[in-house]
Each structure stands twice: as C-alpha cells, then as structure tokens.
Image (tube, rainbow, N blue to C red; front, side, top):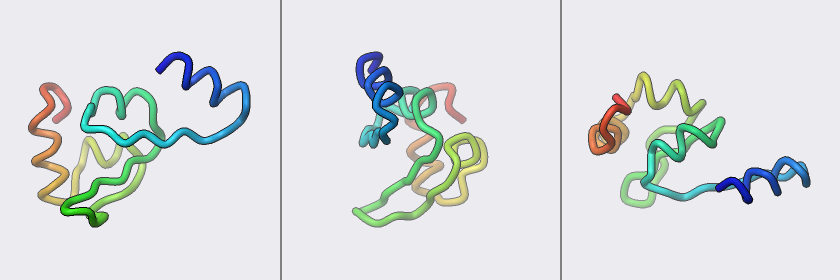
Amino acid sequence: MDLLVRLREERGTALVLISHDLPLIADHTDTVTVLDAGRTVESGPTATVFTTPGHAATRALLRTSAGMM
C-alpha cells in the first residue's frame, strides 16, 4: 500500500481499491461504493458511509469488521 500511495501522490493519479478489508479502505480512500450482488447500493464519503450506513448490505458488511461500527 505504501508504494501505491507514493506512486499516486507522485503521479497525481487516482487509486481504485476493490477490497473487503474495511480498515484498509477507511485509511486510504476518500469515497467508497458498496456493492450488493454486483449492484451499487450506497456510495459517498468513506467516513459518512462507514459511520452512518444507509443500506442493510453496508451495515452487514461493517458488522463483519471489528471496530468499524
């Protein structure tokens, strides 16, 4: 992750992460999109989505990661 972050900063590019590692997502993203069965169910600023999830799939995902909710 350190290398990817450094390259993103040096080159001024975006970085797209696809992961179930929610602490990683929380630490390295500004926005998050939650998918359920391949469809977007929630999207927005990472902090907002993680602290006030609006969709049941987001809440379920956050429950799987200790300390996220």
